[in-house]
Length: 96
Image (cartoon, rainbow, N blue to C red):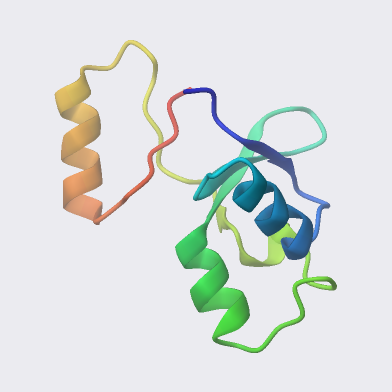
């Protein structure tokens, strides 16, 4: 499945609408150079936007995303990825 991508300057409302439209629950966030800047998940939105009563229209994704997330390489063993996810209680792990 192809990952959903967002830009650091987009707002939370735009991202959540995109996630809902594409039936996703996470998006990789890329910077202007196209590099991985972070990840935004449905849990991030719930805890960092909704629970704090922030406006999704005026909150920039870069303010609430998980910056510099742990990730694995495409050729890393699947068991390594699973180990990272279990140890850190991750539901999402970018593969680069």
